[in-house]
Length: 472
Image 1 (tube, helix red, strand yellow):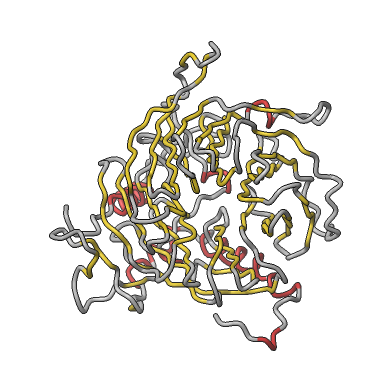
Image 2 (image 1 turned 90 degrees about the vertical axis):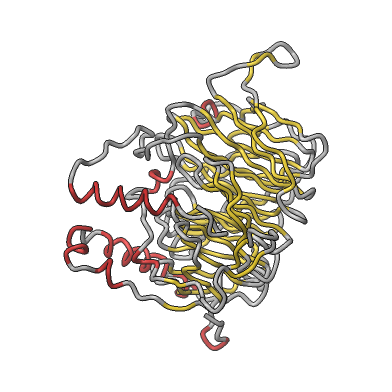
């Protein structure tokens, strides 16, 4: 999807396709699974060869090699395999046990895996009771800096880590086992995420974005279009489309249903990060200390000029569907803003109506990354900093802010000190087997129909996956 200079991609209509792609994607899924099964569409997947085979771990010497020489990984249409929640909030999971697993990476090549029981309290240094992290694993996972980590949800089946060694390590968290390495990229890995339980997405400094299937870790699609490194990728809550920003100063939209690019626009500045809001009705682009918030029509709604350089952005919302922006920055804080209600035709970039709700305190150096999860209707946020500390916050009081008081200030409910590691990335997932949650955070009841049972069996089979080195 190379850029054509005669198309004037900076014009607003170029990204109007976000709505059209989402609309067509939803209409495709709304026709009903039963009708699709009767038509035998699942048996008519179009298989194509990708340019590069999956690199797998050789069990004899530990070096990455092709599992079967001469055979290339296959790819299928993403529209045939992606499973998407019916609502944006369904991507958040409920955990009856109240246990979380936080995984962080650092410049020193180490992965930290910490478990926390939200129901258990320990006595802190000043006599107060607080939850405590329990180290599950701490080990050097890569031969150079770890730049990205991601864990699948629910129940934390898969963990992926990537770094400047150009490899993606895959781990089975249930079996506590490394499955092998994916060697698809020819540059440092800059982003990892699991759009669904059965799919992994990666981005790299080589300018490509790859989508893998966790059943056999085959490459389903390689998305090309950026002229330089890809800085960040944001998958829409529906998992139908994603946005990416890069050093080439462009914002690109990708149709994950078809595995190809669908639009691009020149930003005029390098986008260092991009995120969709929880509702998927807006997205934000980071550039230095500026956060630009757009509608799906590419109208600039608001601009936040943060007092320090922004390192990461995250969104969450409360039970009233109010949208909050969490900004991690070099001011050693996580600052929480309350976004105004969506006005499609705003387009004035006014920030006067964006109040600061709270700050998350405790770090003594720049905050590098943040992530969040909902457990039993409670939103928890984890953050990592160059000070070597991993924090966990409870946002219950903050999300209940009414605007009739001064901004709140919150201290972490749990802290883990790595003793000097320069942390770079973090992900959080729930522990153990859990059920998918409704929009209100309650477990969904399973449908006892022949069709739903077949779907569940198929999903469980796909989730099991296989070792990348081919071992059982």
